[in-house]
Image 1 (tube, one colour):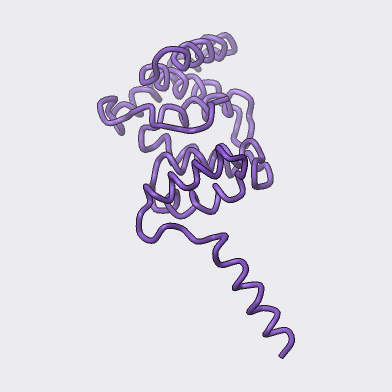
Image 2: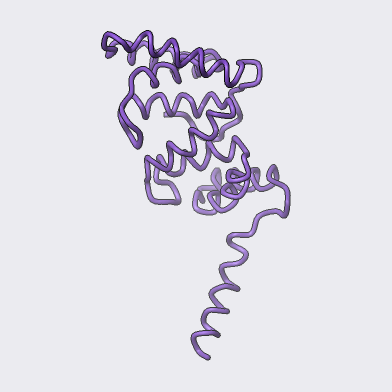
Length: 180
């Protein structure tokens, strides 16, 4: 009886902490953004995870950022890369740039300079201003490490990415956290 009562109290106390605005991923995302900007990334995760799982690109990027940085959750580069890949597949340029840097370093993913270059180049075609410069610098740095077959493979990867997600359907997104 004591265990059941204790479990009931724990569930009652935990309920509000994980609640999301019902059926409205945009409101949940905004609530998570407010939590994040207020310095509570753990709460942001709870608001973002539902929309991210349902395909909200901004929430997917943001969840990836939390796992990459270890903010509010344990740092987990592989999980971060998985979330960035979901957002990148929907055309999120910030996620592409993060994947480029992760593939360049082999952080949570295999070290793959051709794929890193392809992601950086594609992100650079979508970003503007300072973010464009970061993508351009990353692509140039990555290209320096190429081996003989990498430039051709990178070109094919970019063509394939463009075929799957034409540039007109991709966008920079409105991510609340900086790409690193």
